[in-house]
Image 1: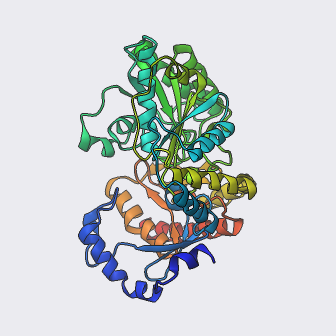
Image 2: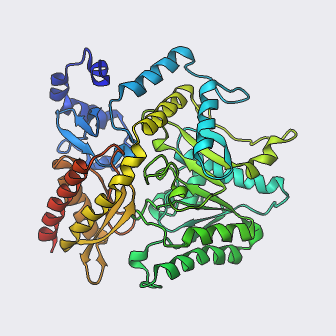
Image 3: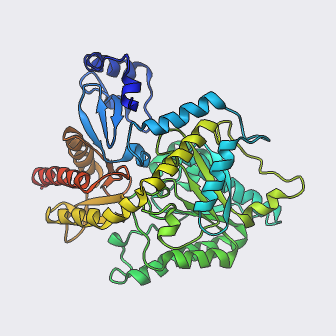
Length: 473
């Protein structure tokens, strides 16, 4: 029996279809959607109700099929409806459904920690579990602060991150986040946030013809920030291997090597936020391996369970963990659901599948095909930059290719939310239209996606961008 048969046993999806309007009405009445404009859903605009998934597709309550071009939210690495993962979860539930990692341990957490340590680079051997990425980043900043205090560096509390970057929405992680619209409603935030420029080579006015020089300049912006604030006050630097918000900003050549040296020079902890970039999204287990650097801490989540259960992790170097392993010291931090036995079992199974089915190899084999297919869209006047890596790509939309004039304000609203997003969805493609910086459309499909899937995604984008170009020119 397939997982779809297991789930749908006893459910009449014809009834689901007829009930779609009722579901939307009930959702409007009681369900509070996250990061969503609830006021935009009225009796004339139904909330999309997804009822099942199968492979790289999901189906709504009306029976309409969509290609999941964002892998849920950069999460569903292996596709939907895998009975083998469901079976691993069910087996664990019948063995040990839950027990906390507060002074106790359980086999699945131990096995998963061992596995992650074996996959992680360098001496990152100690795993602290959370339930998601924001919690992992919150944990990393707290760990950095406590680590420095334990060593006598009591003034090290500040954190450096890049402009436009997103690192979570808890108060600490939100402080590290650099998106003004996310931060402003909750200010004042935690003190100590320092921002440096994002690695946006497409829009740089410095070294625009020399990516190597641009990379060194970018890294030196971090050094200048450390010196400006005072090295004795800076606890950590938080960076993504490929920055998500703003649209898949990749690192310039030499950037990560120089950043690592800068952090070492001033005793600052380097945190690699790999909530999106780990577990195959870039074709490597961890994003740092793509760009040949070893951080002090990796934060991860999303793809660790292929989207089948909530789980996050902070993976820490032996050097940073060492003071917490002696005497009566402890990291005064934790979450009830961290390292949940069922989530750990699901993560172990998903990693096993990725290894057995050579999922990372699939990403690497198709990476350049994906890139070149997207570059082909540049014959459409509103397509500006194409950037990304692995199965993580962004296409920036512009008013003018030559001048790179951007869409902003009401123009961006009409383009992205008024046309591009609904047209993609109408054609059966779920992707992300992101206006947190310059307008970008992102693709991050399940890692099992084929070249045929890539052709569908890019072909759909061509139809929509061509239509937008005619409509908004």
